[in-house]
Amino acid sequence: MKTNIINRLRQLTVLLAAASLTGCGWVKDDLEPCPAKLSLKFVYDYNMKFADAFHHEVRSVNVWAFDSRTGALVWKGAATDAQLPTEPGFVMETPLEGGSYDFVAWCGLSDASPMKLATYNPASKEELEVTLATEQSGTMLVSDAEIPGLFHGMKSYTYTPDKFKPSVEQVTIPLMKDTNAIRVLLQNLDGTEMKQEDFTVTITDANSELGWNNAVLQGPTVTYMPWEIRYGVIGQDNSQTTQEAGRAGDMPESITTVATLMNEFSLPRLIAGQKSTLTVRRNSDGTDIIRIPLIDYLLLIKGHYGSMTDQEYLDRQDDYSILFFIDASNNWYMAGGIYINSWAVVPPQNENM
Image 1 (cartoon, rainbow, N blue to C red):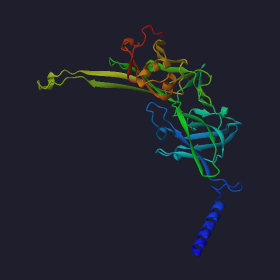
Image 2 (image 1 turned 30 degrees about the vertical axis):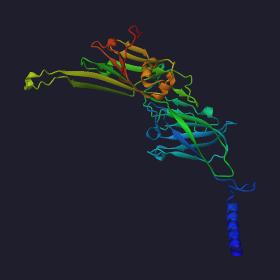
Image 3 (image 1 turned 120 degrees about the vertical axis):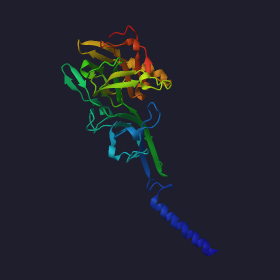
Image 4 (image 1 turned 135 degrees about the vertical axis):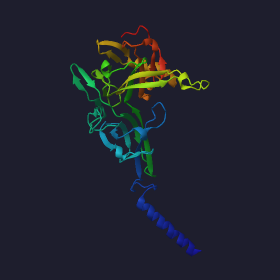
């Protein structure tokens, strides 16, 4: 009995000695704190599918942590496309200790992107502005670039590690996409050939500068030109097969050819209530055959996607197709309506052009 008691005392002594080496979990002021780790996770589910598409769409990550009290930069992290996984689960580790932090993230930046960050070493978060690179053309600022996906995120978080037990915490930073693909299609239903030089399609908007908090800053009006123009003729076979006749010669040949000119644009963030104009000019005489408030028209189909504010819809949606019908005289055939993302829209017949 005495021997068993002595052995148990020895085992307890060993355990106490081991615990004193780690110090974690024992209430003594002179012991080392328990392990603490703060990591970051990025989620892009602010889209029309309401599903996380981070690993599908985001190609790079830049994130900065600022002291919430002083505003000073305390840490920054980055991950390139090669470092990002193709499957869900990306987590960025940080060396941050206890404190309150304001995180700001810009994802999708690269040397090839026309969206340029003011500085990667900011003294304050207000310096993290992104501006679209433009070119001067006469009196206009012009952009005809394809803009890769740009994403913004921010989150404030207070990290308070527990010094008496391991503290592993993860901060989720939600992302919002700031780039839009807009395809403007001009379609001539009578099959008349449409040439690229027949029309000039432009979009004007003052949305080329984004602040640290993703607000569109007051900046110059930019004229957006298509980064790609494609022309195509689609043939549709409308003939009716008459099995009773049994002779090919008895079947009338009915082929409808549809000529389409597609202009593809890349634009930064769209803001509800901001003036943005889509113009189609007939080059033969300089007449603007189409001139509409773009954002107002894009919002006409918002109701088909559930209940959300105008701005939420514009921020979730990032892909638009707008189809106009053109008659044989190269005028806008307004009676044919407009199709936006395959939804039919009837424009006001007194639309100013």
